[in-house]
Amino acid sequence: MNNIIKPLLIVLLSAISIVGCSEDMKIWSAQSEDWWVTFQGDGVYTIRYIGDEENVENLSYLFKTDTGLEADGNIEDLGQRNEIKTQVVTDDIISYGPILLTIEWNNKKEELTLE
Image (tube, rainbow, N blue to C red; front, side):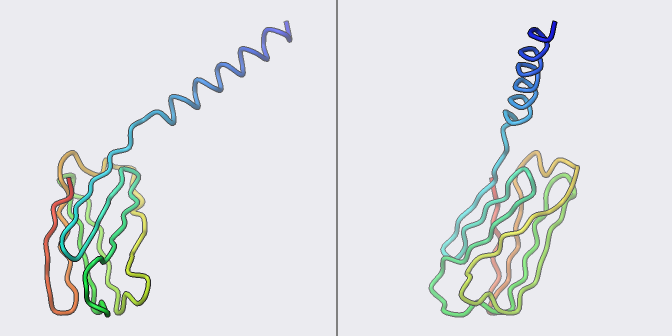
């Protein structure tokens, strides 16, 4: 009996693991002259400055989705990092469609649509 249970448990645990990991994660992205942005279905987003300015200061951003989710932030000085990477914690679906990002820095403003 024990010889049958071990292989069945291994198969069952493997199947559960595969089903849990096989869910396709949606990734929205956009790029402009100054910014490269991604927002993943697990809530992790990355905003990377790719422009020519040496200092990115007074940075503020706001993501808005069609499901009502909003994520925002303010950074006084982006410094040498040139990147923000963080996560929104939610049990809700991030978005069914595009995500709108409004970003302001160095007295400039840009809107990007992540698809």
